[in-house]
Image (cartoon, rainbow, N blue to C red; front, side, top):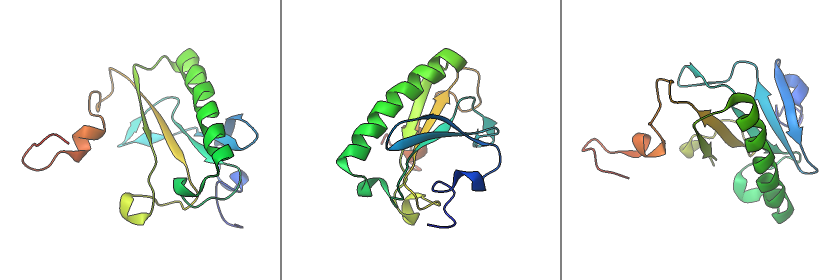
Amino acid sequence: MNNCMFCHTELVENQTITLSNEHCLFLQLDQFQVKGTQLEGSGLIVPRKHREAAFDLTEAEWNATYSLLQEVKTYIDEKHRPHGYNLGWNCEYVAGQSIFHAHLHVIPRYDDEPMAGKGIRYFLKSKDNVRA
């Protein structure tokens, strides 16, 4: 993929490969924001080979993703000391995927941020306030 920002990490300014292994990279941006809030340490785990969605990963890539996720958590815990995490895959356009190279969001969460306590269930609640 010639124009894929995860296949060609040099296409994105201020993007850093922070950690990696044989099959995956952990990418971070200098200014990564979630809902307008700077969440220090946030990044993405992406396979080195172009895979459109998480369902396309090989078993070796799944294992490498898990292994790298453990390293990423240790790194973020030591550097930023978050109070929690959100992890997530968006697969296909209708589910919110906008970059069609599989990527796992790793988002550290902090007690003092505006969306603290608002995890995935918060966004899944219906208008009737029914728990997801």
